Image 1 (cartoon, rainbow, N blue to C red):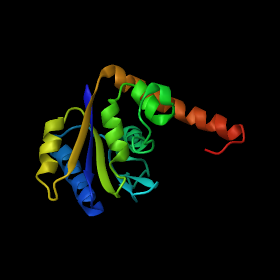
Image 2 (image 1 turned 45 degrees about the vertical axis):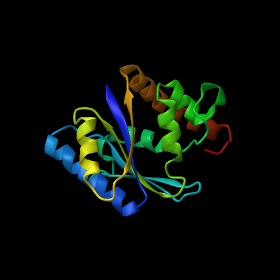
Image 3 (image 1 turned 120 degrees about the vertical axis):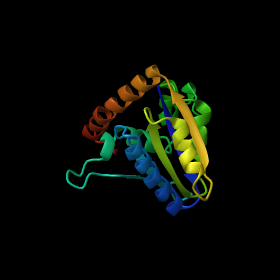
Length: 174
């Protein structure tokens, strides 16, 4: 089991400082790299995912899989119910908590930034304790992922490239 944690700040600078602190915490704990991403929002409809990359390879640190998923949490503000359709419904069907999905999707409605990460070996409580010690105090959103939910999220992500390619080949926009 693991946790998805999203830490919301009104300040971009505070979010980037928190991301750096969490990366340092991972190194101190000697755990395997997990994706830590900073998501920025302009308060309207633009969301950007800022992910650490390995300068030698150009690849995201930690593989990029969870960073991409965390970025997707911010894209669909609709109610995450199965009957609604869309990305929020697919994340809900995969096993994510609907309140968590709704809170994350709307957390940057007034702008600001958030730090998101998946936590396994490091421990969610250590992460939360580290960021609560930083100023300004953030809003922390978190949800527990069952092994079944993690598997469903992996499956969902594995389908994305194929769906995008099919849409482009059909003459649609991606």
